[in-house]
Image (tube, rainbow, N blue to C red; front, side, top):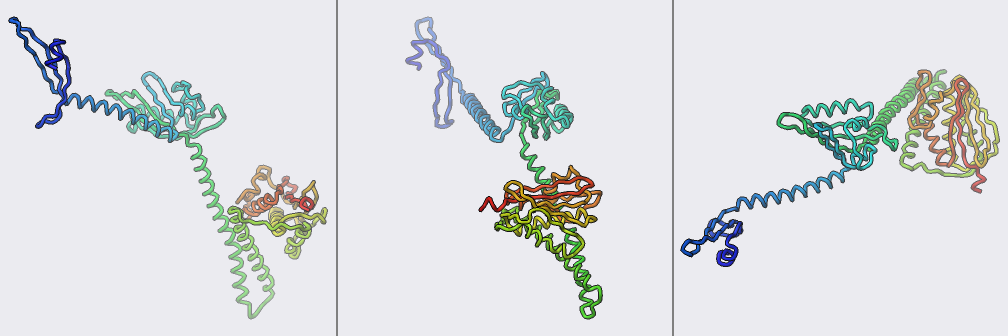
Length: 428
């Protein structure tokens, strides 16, 4: 450089030299040189050497940090996008609010639509609006070190939906303790909320069912146990109470059997294991056979009318179960009415079976829930016995036969439970 460059240019500025010295290692040097002419015609060279190793390390480090910063921003954006997070940034000093497209979408806005803080607050559900606004104000005042995490519903969006949003973020303050920035993320947790609510309802139903089952099983088992104890005492010396005790024991056993069968059938329905053995049979014969125990008891009269020659194509045992459930309900809800009417009629290519009572009827608002699992009608403050499974099982049985099930009821005039089944003609 001194021999070739300097004589030509006269001045050299910031000529960089890198050299590894034996004792001090690698060094970066900046050279500055100038040619000086002496008065007697001779030439001198003024050479300045500055060790810039540390400076270059800092510059290289800053460049590396900047590269890492950009890479971190890219990785953060990928993570935010993958998590479905929306981001927003609010400047309370000038009132500017900037939200990304994902955050806008959660509130039913266009991707790049601009909003201010007042409109943002207005998009929160009215029941949570004041609370969320108060939480953000507390964060701007430095409460909880400016941090916040809340869940709230949006107001109804343009598409008619209401969403659940989780908000999380932090406020930042200058040296005077004044908030100059409030940043946060938003996450749509609507699906999670729906699942949580469904789980709570399911657990409540389970607890309710366990309570009902325990209560309903306890009564007949206690009666059965007492009857057996009395029968044991009089086995060597029977008296006039013997027939009554045997009848009580049989009724209790039938009650326990029915409850257990309902539980087993419900489990089979849930697991899809309730198989159907379909055959052709006269529906009136099944009705007559399944109600013999009621006729024998003599307390209630069952009157069957209609077309008693109609044949159905179905599982006779399952249909018998549905009819028994209907008759038992008629007895349960109309204990004072001693006649139960069953009608059989043809409607197009279906046979319709109806079971009617002359009881007090069922309120209209409760009719849509009668075939729901565990639902039990509470009428006039009296809770009827049962697990709330009989009608549910009956409905599932009829649905699996491609039939329909329903109920008509009027307060003071009684109720009619009915179902339809395919006639045998359509399968012949």
